[in-house]
Amino acid sequence: MKYRPRDIEGKWQKVWDEAGVSRCPDTLSAPKYYCLEMFPYPSGRIHMGHVRVYTIGDLLARFKRMRGFQVLHPIGWDAFGLPAENAAFRHGTHPARWTWENIAFMREQLKQMGISYDWDREFATCSPDYYRWEQLFFLWMMKDGLAYRKRATLNWCGECQTVLANEQVNRDGTCFIHDQTPVTQKELEQWFVGITKYADELLDGHRELAGGWPENILEMQRNWIGRSEGAEIRFPLADGGGDITVFTTRPDTLYGATFMSMAPEHPMAMEFARKAGREKEVAEFVDRVTRQDRIARTSEELVKEGVFTGGFCVNPVTGNRIPVYAANFVLYEYGTGAVMAVPAHDQRDFEFARKYGLPVEVVVQPEGDDPLDSATMAAAHEGDGRLVRSGPFGGLSSEDGKKEITKHLEGKGLGRGKVQFRLRDWGVSRQRYWGCPIPVIHCAACGVVPVPEKDLPVVLPEDLPYTRERGNPLVAAEKWCRVPCPSCGSPARRETDTFDTFFESSWYFLRYIDPKNDRA
Image (cartoon, rainbow, N blue to C red):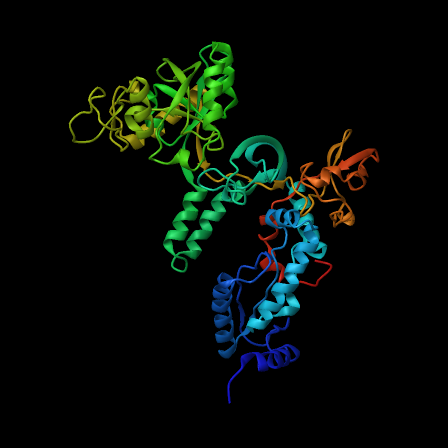
């Protein structure tokens, strides 16, 4: 007799479903085990990548059940997002319809695979029953000062008509969806979540993961958080009109700072250029560099280039006037967007100085080696040593020099010790329809007003024509946008930005535990 899986699969899958063999009871009478796989994006069809990952998870879940554990093995749908919105637009349908139809099809595919999910815990992040809670989280974060709004320069895709996360920009500087569309920089009012307040806590958590997680992953995350100890130093402007603040991990090399490097995006670059009559030259450089991939701009292989802005600042310990350059290797979002350049002791600065004929001053001599000569150096000395040509700090070790020079700057009101992180606060605003509405209202009299908790969820309007011609469709949804201010009752407007889709996927694993609770 020939074995035909299709003839029997449906029968036994129905038996398993009715018997609830994969359901996890809320009251546990055995050791518990939570088997979590990343939930799928409902793109249309389950593919072999899904099969591979979910088969591995299912093997683990079944193994643990056979070992006597009560296993929570849930599944849901990461349903909001830019790809669904764009796909719906291409197919001439509404994003909600596109998404729910895909979910229905993919659900049946997963059930046919026989994966032992607890389907009673299924949810989709585009459901108001789910996203009402993240709107509440956001209101709580606003109340505690963790969610705030500010003007910022961010990645912008002209085709998608929205801000993109750094992870959504290809290495060649194009959009992750439209790989022929260059991502540009655009300044917008955006909502942010203050994740930098937890930077040290995140690093402390890595200690608990050591030995269980691959070390290369932990190292990647440590570098991503990027904790650095150093000093924040003020360089007064030569014309007396303010100062430029920089952060450095090497205050011991301050006497060797012979120029300032500034991100092309830094607003002071064009201010200097306008005052010095160099606006055309600097603007052309800024426009060209800001179109380049920002990851490539930090690479060691990058050909260093820049342009003199026409501005000067003053080295706070030598009193020397030093020129300010816009440089392609400095990023505005890192640190203060400006870097004190010490060419004798930083390789990027060294290459830049040699290219543009800028002074190289050795201020740290390596122990026991032949003295460095700035005229003949072939590369920067980036290591420690003894301070030379450093005024009263000459002869100190690099480590002692860092402490003493920082102390000196603090006494003069020109600097302070500081811990800095590469990590930046999370920009969560997206200029699109298919996302969770941000629960705030804009009032001309009261400013930004949170939506009262009793009025949650703020649900997306469904009756608007979906089109890309006018950008974010929510802007044109006048009936939805116009609301009274919760504070004063005056006519006001809803926020039309929606949350980054990663907002939904940052907490879904918690919702699986009690997905149908309408009180929490």
